[in-house]
Image (cartoon, rainbow, N blue to C red):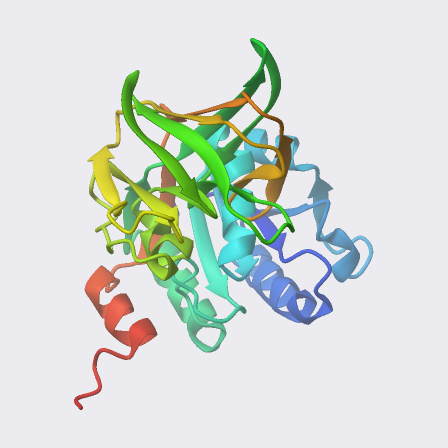
Length: 289
């Protein structure tokens, strides 16, 4: 049976020479199956010259019908933010640590790839956020976020102050180290460390998790994924960070507007993928005390 994917992009972890051999092995395997392969320009230096076609991220998104990400969850987060408008499904090969999103192990990757290319896979839709930062009504920055948008203090050892709104309704004033606005995908990341709940990725929901709030009654709050979250900073020495990778400095009265994007991220999994099994493995829940 012909593969549903015919032109495949390869994206490797930046500045990591360890991924080069895996990228080359995957690329050569795909070429051997008669498929077209395009390597992300940011990863091409890891491979022999002329081994594969090379394209920047925009061209890769326009040309490819599948992107294989080799690295850790952070590499997939960056790929998801940049490729969402092109609706390119993402498949992750885990060369990182936990690997909640990149769930194909290197020792099984070629076998798994063959099954996926034969149509034996699951496709999962994941919610994506978009943050816009305005200052006196003018846009000063914006970014997508797969896991979370975080308003937080800089390197000053004190709390910051801000007001939080949901759909224009005032939720609370907050004095804390910051606020995490997380998707279900991000609920097992920074939000979990802050005491937030684990949310199943199928949920259309967001969670607001205060970071070390001054008032202990400020607890994580789950709202609809269709809600509009707005944070108005009342302090200096603050930043907004998207997925821990994009940072924008904030001034008093800056507004951070957070909404879900219309387009979701499509993740490709092996057909035997089970979310609760991933949780048991990564959190060692399978061990009886």
